[in-house]
Length: 259
Image (cartoon, rainbow, N blue to C red; front, side, top):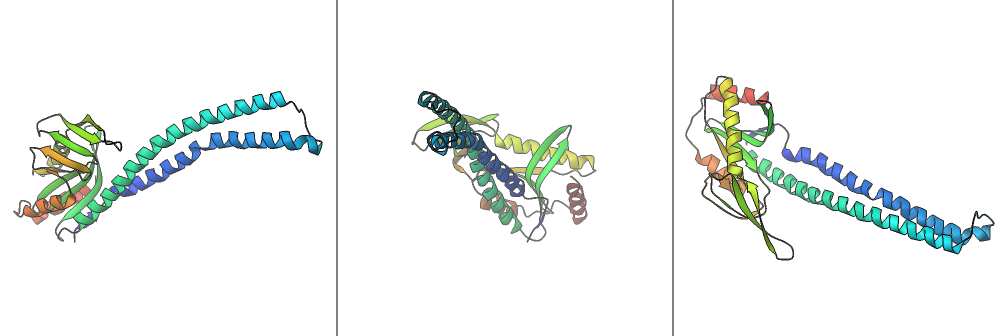
């Protein structure tokens, strides 16, 4: 069983999930305050005169104030619903990321004992922050893994800057869009890892792979793209040639631990 280091991606997302749920609840507060005030005012209008405690009793004014409060309530509720929908979309995305992160961690953990997995690595290189889902280290090489939760059908070439994406809505309508080429993105991250190691005196290649577990279909000319994490694991295990000595593996481990 492989050793794992660093925080799993889902741990950070759990904190964001709780934050979004809190914000969704807070979005409802203003409209609820207005609604409570409206109900109290209605109750006061009808009960106040009988209790002998009433500042005014004007049916026309009552209707006017009620209409104003209802309009304010409607505006606040519509605004709240818009914000809630936005947070819900982010929450749905996070839930998917959490699930995928858990599957990624459990699958990679099943690699042999001589593999090490560094999760949720943040690299500050040349003044820019680069986040990597996982770096896998063994005597058989170094592998950088990026997981993308793109849905639909993806089409493109490894050399393209952008890929096209076609999604189908719940109403069964298809619509297109574009995404940045994830292969180029992971290749840049792999190169950054290689550069960091080179500055520490370690000269070695770093391979980059992309996993697209939510995609319906991927039509690309690249062997670096996988639809599921099992395919990624099989590919990593197929790299059975020893390219790093044990001393170098330990040195690289120490470097990655300090990132």
